[in-house]
Image (cartoon, rainbow, N blue to C red):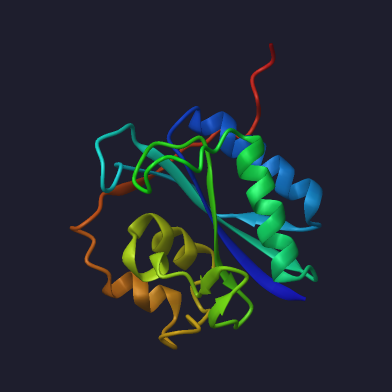
Length: 167
């Protein structure tokens, strides 16, 4: 089994889209574990706050198959790939780590650079994998979070209702 860590974020119908993404992941993969959900301000543009979390999955799937599935998932939830990099989005699912894989593979760079750059990725990752080592730096995720300059990006855990309200 290979450990797959995903970052999930949304600022358009965020709660609904995050629930839908997690439901789809649970249908595709046997075991899915989630961090708490965090709210953060938009970075790089003026926009609504984002909801973010990290998801851990043990998988036997090949990286290429995972990349393809995640693109279909994003597209199915209304992701518009023609928009600017820094813009609002219904869903964004990024592969953070895939086992101990490093370098470029299947069009992505692993481990993902945002791990050490963005609080909304690092804090939930350090929450669910505190004693795991970052494949690039060799530091524990808890050490990376401890050393992170928390004044640069504001985020806070929120109470998240995983149940969809009855219609």
